[in-house]
Length: 255
Image 1 (tube, one colour):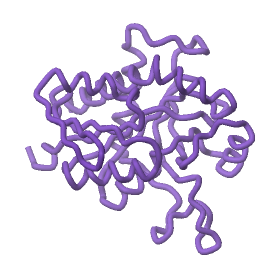
Image 2 (image 1 turned 60 degrees about the vertical axis):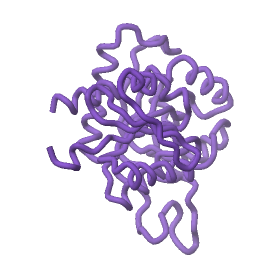
Image 3 (image 1 turned 60 degrees about the horizontal axis):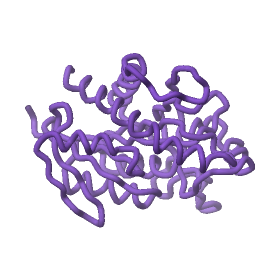
Image 4 (image 1 turned 90 degrees about the horizontal axis):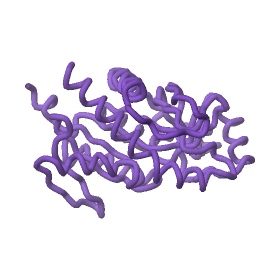
C-alpha cells in the first residue's frame, strides 16, 4: 500500500449535530484527539479505514482554516464534507440529498476588477469535486436510502431523492423569500445554498487535494428556514451523515 493510499480521509461538518454519530463510532476503537486552532480533530478508524473527523464550525473562513489544517497537519488523502443546506430549486424536498457536481461562492464580488463570482487570481467561478469520490458518494447515498431500516419521517412522506448539481456558498444564512429569489435569479442553476462548501473546494483546488461534498436539504431557505433547520439538525442530520459516510467507506474498502 502506498503512503498516499494509507493516508487518512478527512471528514468535515460545520455543526456538531451533523457528525455526532460518526465521532461516537470513532470511540469504539483506538482514537486520539488533536487540538489545533481551537478545533478538535478526532483521529482513528471508521469501518477499517483511517479517518480524521472534525467540526469546522460555520462559515467560509472557518471551513478554509479546517481544510488547510487537515491537509498540512494530517496529510489527508481527500476531504469529504457532509451536512445540511437550504434548498433553492423547487425540485428539491426536505430530506433530499444533493451531491455537489460543482461549487461556487455566491457572495464573491470583486467587480469591477473581476467579474462577479470569479475568484480573484484564479480566473474561475466554480470548482469541481473529484469525479471518482463523487461517484462513490452518490452510490453510498443510494445504498443508504435503499437499506436504512427506518429513515426519519420527512414532511413529504416520500423517500428522499438524490440530486447532483451546483451548490453555492456564502457567509449568510438565507432565511427569507426575497433573498432566496434574488440568489436563485442570479445563479439559476444552483440547487442548494450553504456556508462552507465553496471554501473547502477552493482550498482543495489550490492544494490539489481530492474532495467531495454531500448536503441534505434541511429547509427551503425562506421564512421557515430557522425552525426547519434547527428541527432537522436535532432529528435527522447526524443519521444521514453517519449512514452515507458508512456506506461510502465500505464501498471504498470493497474497491
